[in-house]
Image (tube, rainbow, N blue to C red; front, side):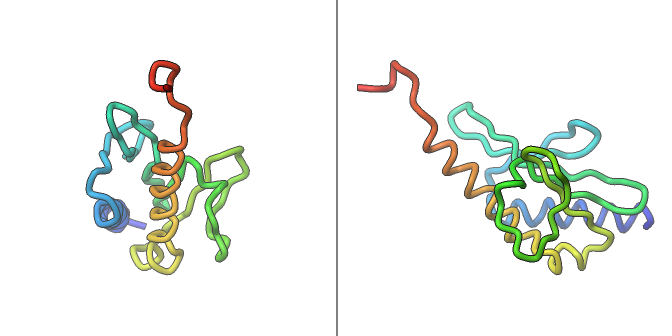
Length: 122
């Protein structure tokens, strides 16, 4: 895969994330581009996009808890999972939109259900 194809994959993932939630922020970190959802100074790392020699990888920080009926998520770690992408077409065919949407919804629900500090409780 050439660099132009890799860039196209990365750019399309970034566009897709913004389409789902324009409040997501991106940073260059860990050798790729990470994206996180922040609210009131509390940020939750959702995942990242990484380029490799023959593919790009969409990493999802809490991927192990996502529904994946097509079984496109790879990895065996406790939380993190990834989708290998060799073309822009695979972003759609591997269901990346649904996975990203789940990850963002989960981050919002998890954030809202976290216990409040003692000073916030009545």
